[in-house]
Image 1 (cartoon, rainbow, N blue to C red):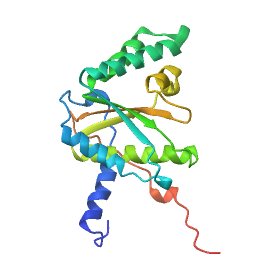
Image 2 (image 1 turned 135 degrees about the vertical axis):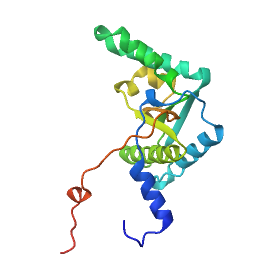
Image 3 (image 1 turned 30 degrees about the vertical axis):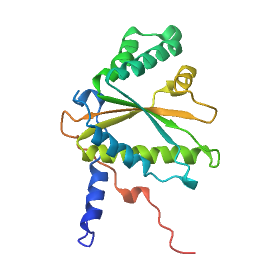
Length: 197
């Protein structure tokens, strides 16, 4: 980095560079402090959205409520699997939420004034904001988008109307291990500059 980047910008760039997905099995069972969860949700709420539609919606499962999401995931898997049903996958779906103190459904509720892809991108920005805020608090997160997110049973559970979507499930907990290192390819391989007529 060049020396003319101010401290605030450097902090933001470092947070982006160091953000990692933390598998749900690698978080502590300790409850997430209410003030930490509030900060994470507030960060999400400041995501950009075209025409200020703010299409992100979150349903949070914690405490005994996690079992309701576990049951939904397991029973939906069972309904969708048909003759490919595997008991171990059923149990994994049911028990996934028991490993994290907070599980969240990520929903999209558009206002019908933007193309759908813009609303999906806005929700993605909200989740990125959440992820950055969470990691700054030592909270590991993972975003799962299983094929069943648009299953009729999921839509019914969340009372989704036409145009509304479930965009996956988000699992959170204080990190039990250091955040893993990662790497990216050279950004110059992904950028084309056009600076002439």
